[in-house]
Image (cartoon, rainbow, N blue to C red):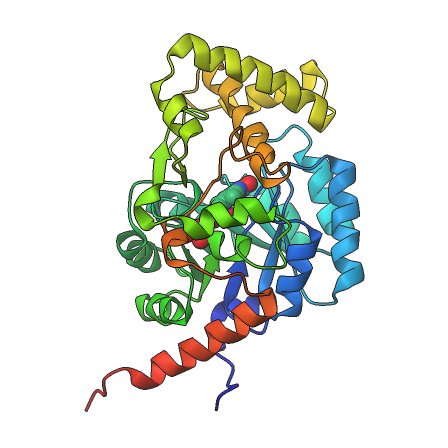
Length: 354
Ligand SMILES: Cc1cc2nc3c(=O)[nH]c(=O)nc-3n(C[C@H](O)[C@H](O)[C@H](O)COP(=O)(O)O)c2cc1C
């Protein structure tokens, strides 16, 4: 009984052992973390928005060289080179395509025709309804307590709302770190849980130790939401840098954004023409100003400074509120085994129903 599997519509759809997902986190969810997650029996998702197309291809091949288990790739449907990235996913036989923003109906159809499972992440019921109508196989629904870009509705409200609205499997994200959370999500009607912050805080994650230490030391109240990084609500650890960003005026913000846009262009080996094309794609159908688009380059550069370079003074540390509940760095295998044991125990300690 101890090792009994908790099978759900999600585990059947994707072919993983456990109903647990490690989400695509820029600069964090690389081949090492993803393959360790896959080997642990959960679904690992590579973050590709912060990789060039060539880096994505070699990252996918590296994961395949480390594990035979299914894994996914997270990409931006509005990136100028999205078609090339989709081709890599199809050619390399990647099991799951995950999207931060809703992909088009055509893109979903193309991936599904090639046998790829399509799982967009959404933060509102109407987005879930839209992608379900377009043929998405499942959705990850992220409540406001989740790390990175986030909404204002808590998982406990958003999750049942989305479960009631769509017929496809719903994976719950935002605020999960243990087996009790998995059982609670299943009780709401979810088919599994997805976690970002908890997987960042494992020994398999490549985030520098000094940065992990900042997360471990954080209390729930040390996690805040700011719109000053890129104009969108972004949940992260509150640091001196974040306080300074909150105080800075519009001119200083734009100057910083221009610097970061130039750095991002160098890093991503994009031409200015490509950057403008991507900006236009982001703008399409949305009420964004050019200064907001410029600000978007802030996120990858500020995240890289901490997640790769270990500069907690110069970078931001995207984080869910759940960082305040986490105080260890297990391996992915230890984490998933422990979480599943906790979930089985929680199921057995629920009050009887007679
Ligand atoms: C450091 C960090 C980076 C993230 N980067 C991305 C990203 O590039 N794309 C994306 O779709 N979500 C990103 N997210 C959001 C996560 O994928 C996930 O939805 C979120 O962390 C779930 O909430 P939790 O942290 O409470 O588990 C990021 C989150 C963190 C903590």
